[in-house]
Length: 68
Image 1 (tube, one colour):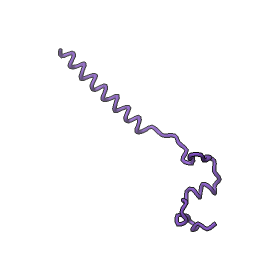
Image 2 (cartoon, one colour):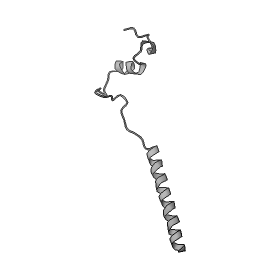
Image 3 (cartoon, rainbow, N blue to C red):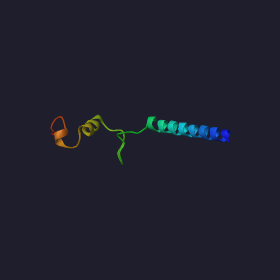
Image 4 (cartoon, one colour):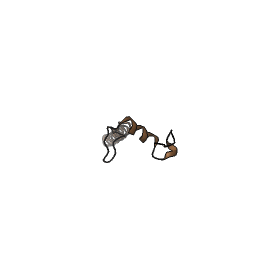
């Protein structure tokens, strides 16, 4: 009976360790994505388009005030 208890505790600790390792792996893995990629957009944009995207669409967020 003592052997069964020792085996059960060992298996429980092993299961906890595996779950911890899996959670750690999920949290630390890097996601690969292209932030410029949007639905229907091409990832290759001109520098002008990239700067307009970075500045925002509203005129007050643009450095130059939004004038052409």
